[in-house]
Length: 552
Image 1: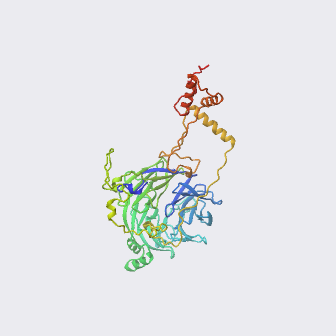
Image 2: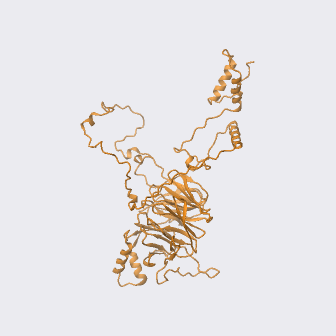
Image 3: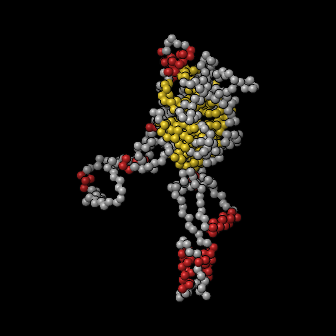
């Protein structure tokens, strides 16, 4: 689609399912920084990397020691590493280009989510286990540092007390959400009491606290791409957006300055006073009618849109809000539960994962409006006669002869330097970014002669029965051959027109025609038979059975 002819008044959000990806049972997804590669964790322990431009599989990362489901995948900043967490309590760091395992760490609990440090050379990750507090894991040494999930008065680093206990006397666990800020110097932790803790993970200290109305469990916490907004998803069925008041860099120094200005308060009250100067509530999103729980909410690439998937069983609904708080679109997919969501970093594309393991790609349904960018462009209802000017089609019109070009034709045109994208202005270019993976062609497997004869017989039977060859359709109406990779599809989306083959009777007539050459003065019946054969070859619907044998 050409960008100049797209109507700018249309909403910049997806609307329909463009196509879907299928490979095993996929559980979780993550885009790289540029959105050119899509990583998907599968239920068999493998990690599939899709080339999002061609919709083909670029690489498969498989660890023989891991045969359980993947719980999360995370790219490094420049795309050279992938961190994979699995249900066997392991954290595995992969080299994407080489397809080799760099390190493997086993935790005491199953990590539900793991995120690499946003630095250019990550060796630290933030893991959120199922039954313990979030922890910082050193992937080189395997050492872990447990982060506090409550204020110091309740107990530093310990889970909040609970009234109920399991039958064995152990305390029940509540999964805790956490994330790095944009530059990775601060960790934001959401606990089960409805509090956002601003934690200095190096000194393992809570520097600020922001209580959430409702005081319910925080299930998700994530920053926008530019680091200016923080999103939380709570058990009270509400998605909240907070504006980050701290600077993107040197946030800890700012916290020290704020801490010095707060006098007369101690303990929790002082943490709340500092927290009020770190985050401020910006918007709240919820479905006031259905009161649905939300699954995997996140921001768009530019931070202008917020999406959340319905956590109800048996429905695949995606809600889209603008940052002003208005619900602009509800995307309804197949009758399959939604388990993960991701918005493309650059384009208005949303990728969702269903319970059956399919990845659905939601894209915008573009409509061309030529007059949107050219006010003097006139769309005609029907053809009109046009009278051209005298010099309109001259090589050098008279109107341009007067003007002298200011362009120096001897200057060299730079076609190598790439303009800096504003969406990636934080790139320090200290390391070359990995955007694409080289394609590795797979050799064709020769078919056995028996299979060729079998397929030929089936083709003849289908021609005799008169049923045309059919292809399985995608949800959007495009054909997709599931036995082959998406690379083998026609790039333009067009189908190859199949040439109809003659029936057995037609083949017999052609063979008889070769054995008995026609005489120059053939009878009228012979001409009629020849005409029927020609008509059959050209697809006019006349067969040899319709011709009488009266020539003898």
